[in-house]
View 1 (cartoon, one colour):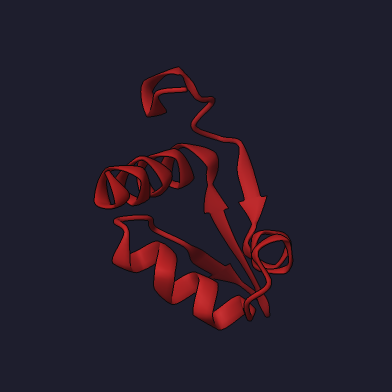
View 2 (cartoon, one colour):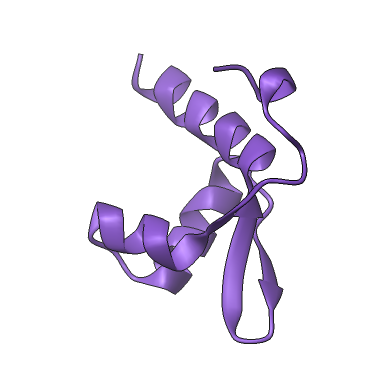
Length: 65
């Protein structure tokens, strides 16, 4: 899936991503930023737009290739 084909208003909870990958929420925020993602905080919760997440995942894949 390319970032251009993702609904730009769709967002994902960083807490859910962190739990899925077995790391802390703040560590996931830092990792996403390192990969070019743009997580943001609303209140105490962190989110990332799905389009930004796709960009970060593509960067992670290219780093391991």
